[in-house]
Amino acid sequence: MKALASIALVTVLAVPTLARAQNASAAKNSEGDRPAETFNEIERGLYFAVQGGPYFVVNPPSDDPNPRPFSPGQSAQVEVGFDLGERLSIGFFVLGATNRAGSEYVGKSEGAASGDFSTLVPGATLRAHLVGFADSQEVKRTFIYARAGAGLALFSPKLLLPDSDILVFAGPGVEYYTRLRHFSVGIEVTGSYLVSSGSFGFAVSPNLRYAF
View (cartoon, rainbow, N blue to C red):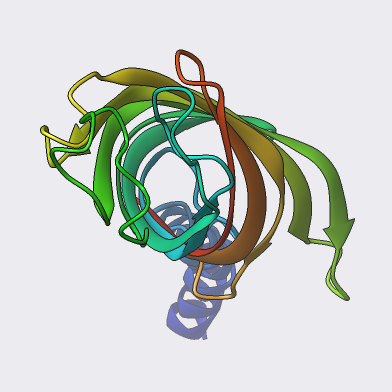
């Protein structure tokens, strides 16, 4: 009987100790669990963007009194930049454009050349998100923005337009951040101005952006 009583006493004393050991082990395992991985709904930071579309020059560069006919064309642009938070971004771009012009357009060649011309513009740009609209999950994915920039315009052929110029542009756009996190798509309308020649232009440009 004494042996049984001793066994029972040892069992009673051991149970709480084992329980505490199990609880400590469980707590340790819980603390060591790998935390759940979370993702940003929208990635911002370093980005790469492409855009392009119709580009029109109302009065191409030319010496007076030579004709300056309306010139339709196409443009394409690549841009690398960085988002400064949700609202602002800065970037550097290279823009290429080709424009149609008839034989009456002699530019600044004094009649030695005529017709179509192309433009290459490296430069910098600033974009500001003005208004954001949230989706059903309260994530702001759609933004109305304003974008402005400037660059050095280099023309070809040189015989037609030998002088470079300063191109400035600005305009509004709409951008939608997709559920793929890194990608956004948009469209913008910009007005442009060549400072030295006084030439006006405008463009309609769909765009695609990838943020790293």
